Length: 152
Image (tube, rainbow, N blue to C red; front, side):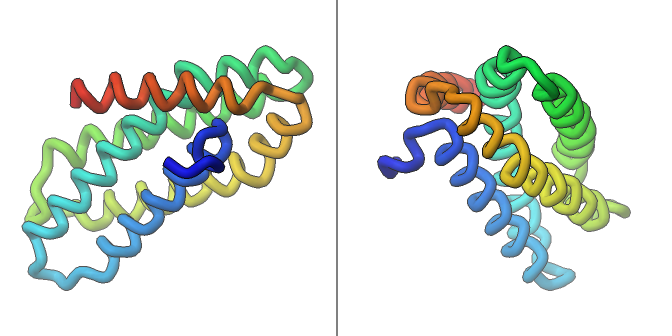
């Protein structure tokens, strides 16, 4: 992990870039690349599961404590997570040959793209401005992410 990725925002942003790259790789695959599609979709689902858990358990509660309108922003993000989790659960039960598999990956990609944009343009600047201890949060999130990854 780079020094920048150690703070909470650096870590979450690095996760965003990783998932965007996985979605790009998925979209570049041909119709018949089912084994590769399944592998990439599984990687996307795992990365998103880890990411949403550390946000919901650690980062979002810290944001919520900041008061003002952060609570509304966090509420919206949690609802977006729920929608993504639903699609992730569906994808994990499917195979790339199944009808709507590619469509579900595409919709998940679009939802995540929207979510990432809001976090990076609105929530992260607010977290910096609020003076959250981003280094401490990042450390806590990294430890928790390792714990969760060990169970997946």
